[in-house]
Amino acid sequence: MILPVRTSISPRKTPYANYALIIINTLIFFATYHPHYAQMGGFVVRHTLRHWAEPFMLTPAQPHVWQFVSYAFLHGGLAHIIGNMFFLYLFGNNVNDRLGTGWYICFYLAGAVLSGIGHTLVNSNPVLGASGAVAAVTGAYLVLFPKTIVTVVYWFIFIGTMDVPALYFIAFKLIFIDNVIARYTPNVAYDAHLAGYACGIAAALAMLATGLAGADGSDLWSMLRQWNRRRRYRDLVSAGYDPFQGRARRRVTAREVSQGPAEETEPIFKLRQEITARIAQKNLAEAADAYQRLLELDAGHVLPRQHQLDVANQLASEGKNAQAAAAYEKFLAHYGGYEHAGQVELMLGILYARYLQKPEAAERHLRAALAKLSDQDQIRMCRGELEKLRY
Image 1 (cartoon, rainbow, N blue to C red):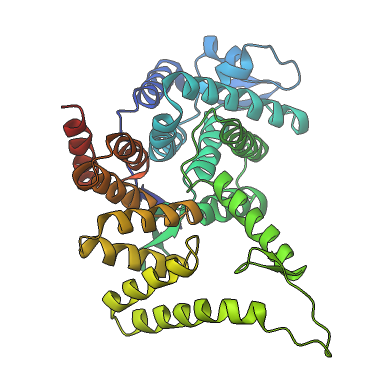
Image 2: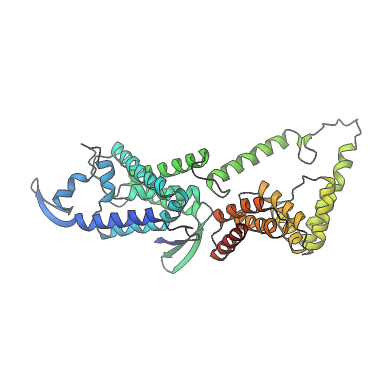
């Protein structure tokens, strides 16, 4: 058994809409739940709802329009309501925070409707429960927060915990294994779940692509765009583009002798080697010095991700604030999908606010940091810097 118990991020604002949905589902459950047995066609059948609530289930044979919403607020037992509300709490709080109250409620209800449609298309048995809507919310979490960590408890022979990236846990465990491979449990609406996940993933990607949900560089849409940029870059290089010269490589035949391009790139190549060697030796001061010499030859040059960050941090520690800010800016421009980009934004905001007297740039980066940070101490620091800018 594997059960998720927490995620590595918390909402910045109280997710009132998600709390309201949990409360409404719970109240309706206690109002409608009434397990009893009744005679039907010569058989004794167990019912879980009060008689007046049964028409609000979704019946694929003769569906009514309202049932595509009402069924999602009914549940067939304590385990059913507790499981759904727990997953809604676990993943819905941050999705609510990201989308806002209005959009989140619309998203949740749309997930209920579309998952109900998905169930109706391939099944004839009645269905009830918020599982499809919760699956849509969980699919949105996968898109909006794929790099966050989900802590899961497992118990087989041993009991323990492990941390898994949300992208892999939701995609493989919740979607593929639980709803495609292990379709063993009777009376579980697997197709409603799959329709909900598909709805949530597609809708969240569409909102990111159109700007309705702001991309922060760590979401699935940004990851796909970065993958596409890398793919195009590899295609350009394989076609002859020289990334160091910024132009197509000149193809030289065996009889020609042309040392120009090689001579131009040799100093850059040597400085890159020197920076790599100095960082490996933990000599960041000389690495930063070599980086500044490298910029004199090629002002637009960017180091590999960790090297660029190490050099920027070293420049900041040396009090070379303008050079550090420029190095951080290059880092964000090329590695915006870095999982700790919020901390880099925060550092840039502090540099611009405290040392470089650029309040507009400081506010821009501090607000970007506030949208990405999860550490409460860093969030408080960020808000403190923003408050200082107002006075």
